[in-house]
Image (cartoon, rainbow, N blue to C red; front, side, top):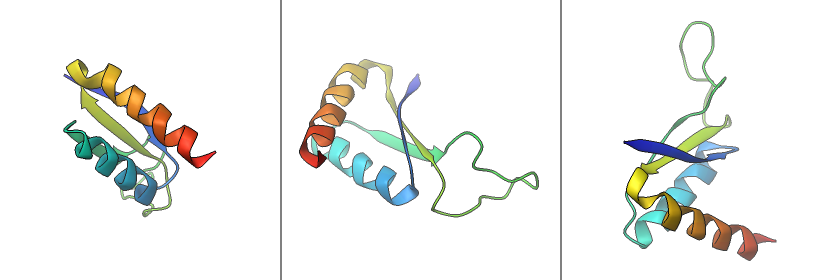
Length: 74
């Protein structure tokens, strides 16, 4: 089962995070975040929140990677 581990502010940020997860061999997926679709069910573009998902067995390791990324950017 896939579990949401983070909501990035843009698609670009989500792609960067997905890449960091894949670098440590964690398969990750991204998709438009809640509220990012219009009433006509069309995406509003890359500058909307995007959710990042991993397999439930990888959640703990993924959260550690996210903490590392956050501490590196502060």
